[in-house]
Amino acid sequence: MKKKILIAGNWKMNGKKGDFTFINSLKEFLSKNSLKDIDVLICPPYTLIDRFSKLTSRSSLNIGAQDCSTKESGAYTGEISSSMISDLNANYCIVGHSERRIYQNETNKIINDKIVKVQNQRLNVILCVGETLAERKKSNTLKVLGNQIKGALKNNVKPNYLDIAYEPVWAIGTGLVPDNSDIELVHNFIFKKLSKLYGGRAKNIRILYGGSVNPKNVSTIISLNNVSGALIGGASLKIKDMKAILKQLI
Ligand code: PGA
Image (cartoon, rainbow, N blue to C red; front, side):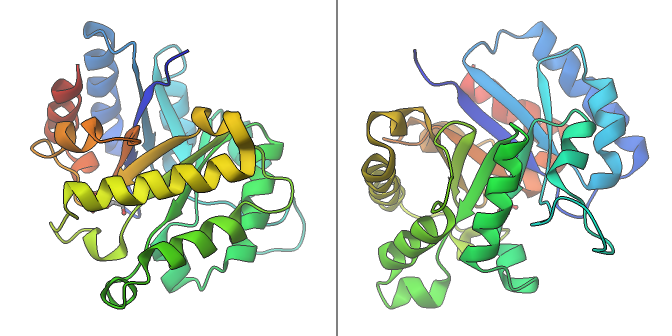
């Protein structure tokens, strides 16, 4: 069966309760347009997941979280577990976003623990990987990505309930995007790594691109070899841009 494309919005620390109009508008757009080969996902802050899940319960719009704890439950003030996310009827969870690696010092070991917890709840993981500008300048991109993938996917990580997002750190929120040939090179590399780990089952893992995706560049990016979706930050906050992105792909 052909893999569906995944178009995922990462709202980061943005959004307020009034944004139900955004969700209703996107829901309506999805019901009016035939998007049978595209999964659409919005990952708002935790505080909006319950409200958004209820609004989308009978629609094709998916709701996810941006992170979760490495722990199941207990004395971990401020943490949110994967089972709590599952309780809210979300069905995806982003793990290892570069902003968490940088600001919260998340290591590949922590990311691996989180992935296992998310998969235990049968939630889909979107594992983010990507190199910094300094690493790219030293021609270390593939080495960095190889280590991130190896570290994050060890110990009990299953190929089902798994998608990967390649997000070059220097492309996030900057308007800069790698050349098409660079995106393809990296996505082919990631696919090869996944094939080594999971054999034929690697084909079911979507490899998304993320970093300054917008309505103008999305269709070219999605057409590249081994690119099966996009993780979108800034442009996913505006309903006009989200619809414009999806229209490019119908
Ligand atoms: P951006 O963010 O689309 O604003 O570059 C992407 C991301 O961080 O997931």
